[in-house]
Amino acid sequence: MQISDLDKIVAIETQIYTFPWNKQVFTDCLNAKYIAKVLEKGEYLVAYALMSIVLDEANILNICVSPTQQGNGYGEKVLNYLLDLAEINLIQTIFLEVRASNKIAINLYKKLGFNQVGIRKNYYRNSYNLREDALIFTVKRRNY
Image 1 (cartoon, rainbow, N blue to C red):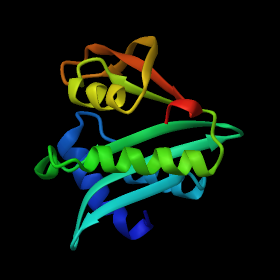
Image 2: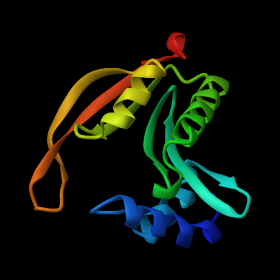
Image 3: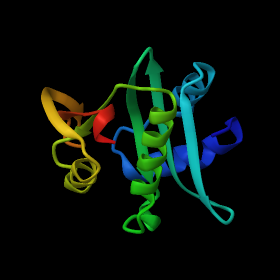
Image 4: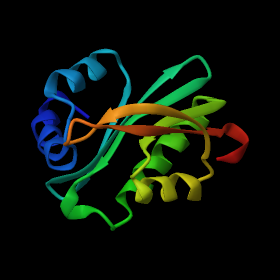
């Protein structure tokens, strides 16, 4: 992921999320040297992911697939890439949060060995200014 990708990324964010990250958030992630990857298909940016690493733990901050490209396995491909990077970096535990309503993502995380370890009540906002729980998932190094 580079600064030159951010307009495309923000366009995807805006299509996917009611409360998308803005360009400055992504810029801050790049400046913080988070792992920031894009997946391109030809000239099109189809998916992206961000992960922070502190010592032997990682936190997947964002994985997103363009709405026109969902269902093609790109989310799994990006997540597997992050898991491979975690293995190379000797990461012991990876964490992520996901909306309780995001069943497709939850199924993918479970498929790749993640387990739910907690709930953040009312963590996410939605379009009706209500709140939605975040499910906290983790995977340990021996599982991926």
